[in-house]
Image 1 (cartoon, each protein chain N blue to C red):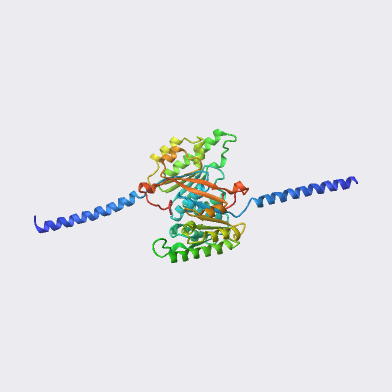
Image 2 (cartoon, each protein chain N blue to C red):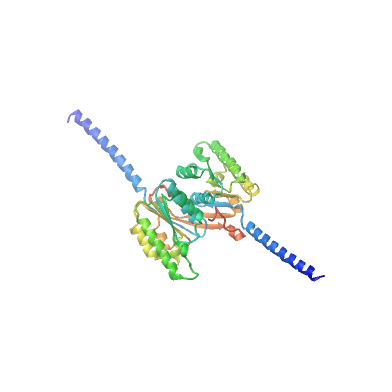
Length: 206
Length: 206
């Protein structure tokens, strides 16, 4: 073996080691990123507003995203106007809860509305361009069994594209959902001004 | 007493009753609105992002508002860019935590930075035009006694304009702050993907 060959081999080994290190770093980065199933539940404040905050973060990063609103009035037209007026190119907004009557009148109609919302949600989640889908107050529809928890969980586990984040909000998140979620936060009520006669106010509640 | 006088008196009484009812309604409305001291604490997610969501709600309602960021990196430049790029007419953004060294190097300098942030916060809160001020991660500065909790509590109770909302975020909110707050939410960590090797991602964490 000549000295030249030895040098050549050493150079090659060093080059390969460098390549491998770069690849390892890349894989490490790749493994560190994943589309998350995120749940905001609990009786406290901030479930919808932090969902809204995350959607705006996506907008800030120019990541296409979407909102499906399952309950009427959970979001005021203000937020909707903000998204539709300024960022409709990046964020789709679908208010499916407009027609809900909930426990009041027409259960069959409410179930049909929830299913329509879920059909839209699936379409948005399947779209590989969309990076985050917020299903605002879907937990309420799941709680009343207006949507089948098994179907929702199965879809999130098997059909959600790997890199897509799905955020599900609302009180009383079902155990099956918490089970498969990556990130679960319980917003716990410590103190609430409604108890001392203060009503919902612009900017705070809606 | 003539019939006319009686009628006159009855009319007057009815008019007064009507006035009183209108006034009562107005007072009721007034009493139902109040600038709130809002605290987001706990180890869970959503403290800053729901603060960001509330600020965007204010923007949507065209209510002037402001953010003072006490910790570097709590908000990415994305959110900042979104606010500064699109809504700088409605929302002031002050990142005071850029220079923090925290427990690492220079405590005196960190205290000076925290005090600078608090001075800006007071100026913004005192401004009667501004309807909401978000003091993001101020609880950290309070926890390490970089700011005096007694002074902060005293200011919020005695100098905050009646209709101004102040939102204070960060883990380990001091008991004295919780005591005087109107709305306190603990974001409780139920499940977190960092535990399974997933790192902070755009749109979710920043």
